[in-house]
Image (cartoon, rainbow over all chains, first blue to last red; front, side, top):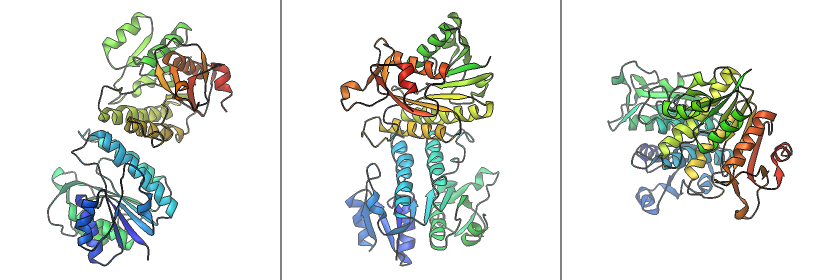
Length: 214
Length: 214
């Protein structure tokens, strides 16, 4: 059975995705940057591959047929890392996926990546990187799902979301756990295949929200 | 007669391009960021348009049919500006060009933008931005010329170049003046149409080098 590669498995969302899939006995491979990060996951019984997003990480794709890209350089590094990780490593992940014949590539994008000019946000440079990463995946020919969660919280996930953007900023939040559950649904059931979907907390169960978003 | 828009006309290469075209009585429009920058050029009799690459600069394209994109955020700003100027503004310039029907778009790219991994250079984040800007132009359908000059010097231009990369690093230099002369040739004579060309100092006159590089 082919495996599911989670790139950015030490990230806040990636961690939950790995846990969810592992607890379901799904064949997940967690890609992390260092051996130290690997240990915690290995102690949980998770298969881990160490890979550096700034060099070559093609080995991580061996025996995989699904990929989650939830890696990000994060807010504490410079925009040089945004270019190298959020954009260039994402591009390489798509290239490797094409080489090994990945069947589903789930990209964790962000609200605003559809048009970095739309919000004139202070994270606009980041959104430019995400825009081009998304476009590269879109035009790759891979079966893609691009998820664009709203403002992330650490609230407990309810398993209830909506893919419709509200006009009220109060409704643009979503918990990382619900994002992770949405990713899990896409991976396990082929949800939101070849779709770009925004994600917010809402009133629909994930399986309904992501199937209905055609 | 339609005009030639030079974006980044206050840059080191852009300035020379404007001067060359203006001295030949070509209908050049120099786009600069501020009124102060505009004054110097206006005193030379050059038509100037003030435009901010970080917002909307579509007005600059009015009555133009050729574009030179030689803008760059430069080495003294952060990589946030690389994302906003070298990548996002370049993308917008291509979009505006499609809207107004630009006949030739000359992009000043750089050595290494063909593959940011090739040299493992310290300017790799910059090369990632240039890679995606070039790709966006390439897939736009516009008649393009992508020029990738080697290491830039302020030497006097000789009008002699080569488009063949030498294995010796000593031969990877080119003066900004020769880059500007190459741009001028592309604009005036349709040289290197729909081509990606590397530029180094060499032994060929520009008209031969750029016509022969098919």
